[in-house]
Image (cartoon, rainbow, N blue to C red):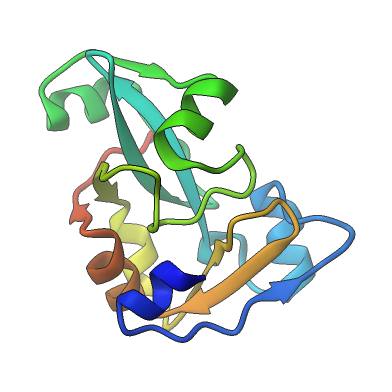
Length: 147
């Protein structure tokens, strides 16, 4: 996680051979609440990739996300995610991408002392504070989740 070091972070990356591809798998592996898992989801806003950092307990409302970002939202496919971030779905970290992405963060993540995010592979995660998450990703905190 060279990107983390560049941002002044030194995360302890944990590997779980059984996988942490889904929020449920990650929460079970690390023994935390589902809401503490950061889902790094790539969408397209009028064709441009954007990153929605979402609590594992929440779903993105694409209509609200589109209003927030000022465009039409579609979900990026696996190739689009890898092209935009350099990572596969299920292992996309919240920062350190192939190119800079506009990012938004779910306010629910800020209610926890720490959160867990993918560390670049579908079987690795790391812990950080919500403040570190927002700072490192450059995310705007905004409500874009369903319900």
